[in-house]
Length: 236
Length: 291
Image (cartoon, rainbow over all chains, first blue to last red; front, side, top):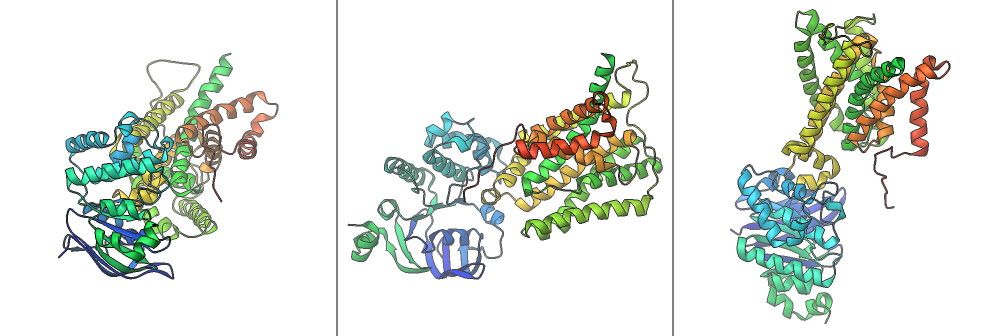
């Protein structure tokens, strides 16, 4: 069985159904991308895994069924979610934001070491560690969101459009750091992106979502070479 | 000059009690966006619990600590049982629940302990080893104890893991859940803490205003005024606001002609004035909402 296995996942916002039976799987240590247009259900898929929306269907992580768990419990299993909009605690300092990321951990010494390693990945956060997080730029807040997720020592990271609203150079920088994190920590990642080209560069596997259904999936190269995907999502 | 100093010091003492109430109100407000109108009556009820314990023979300090602890548990239970079910209800429903709590506590206290006015012992000895004409022993003790309690509360929020989690849960519940914080329990903990702080205020004010079911009505109003003056989004501001209101109240009572009759009016004028001219208070953030 795969590390993360999603079968027949349906999700609802009150009466409105947003996912209509999504299936995909993710292997340990790999990066999987979910691509799709606005409103395709990408964010909802991540929120469904974290139990933030009402769902039907099966989500099995590391052999454990997640349905029926609270969001906090899912996080406790080692799933870190870098949410849409970055989820910054704006009035707290950079350091406090990172400390919050390690909220479920008790190993103080290791947490302190991990904070230093986050500053290693993102030196700019280190320079601003005492600064109020709300005053950071968009790119820095995205880095902080990823750093906060790393503080959990996650087995799986869910990343919701890390490129959103950022300048191309910053996007490049953040994706390079994500590649380095995978290399060094071996963290599995489930990545949701509208920016298909950069996501396909990083990911091993990808799925294409349209109106709440998976319409295509496979190795990243397979999607990259597909005529329709290229025209609709890569734009050349 | 002596009179002025006496008034100011007594104002600081009573003001520090307003600070407790203001802080309790602000804590709940930050987490829920609503004023807990029952905060004063909860504190009054806690004071009756302390009074009962003293009646049973407990030393007054033990009664104080027990009542504060019981209030904490009661605050947690009230949040879980009464407030949580209306968490997502419209604003008006929540306000009605708070007012309902106010009426229930007031009536229950009258029913259990009757409406007759009772004296309440001070936590502090009559003889402090020195004499001062400027401030009485109870007032001096009140200032010392409340400042100590408030410092503890701030240290808790500033330096502990749970304190940080409570701030995070109040500021950004969704994000807090995503780092594994149980937001519901943080809210309950907040209610418990607020009830405890309110209890401290109630037990300290009782020897001054005497114990009766309506004793907190005025105090709560001054507490609201203090919270608004300091800024409902700023706990530190609320504490300062409470002190300022206490001192101003005494000055108005003495120096404004007919002022002793106008003390409560003054609090109301302050509330209206702040809301009209500086809604964010002195230290609060101006909240801008995109529409």
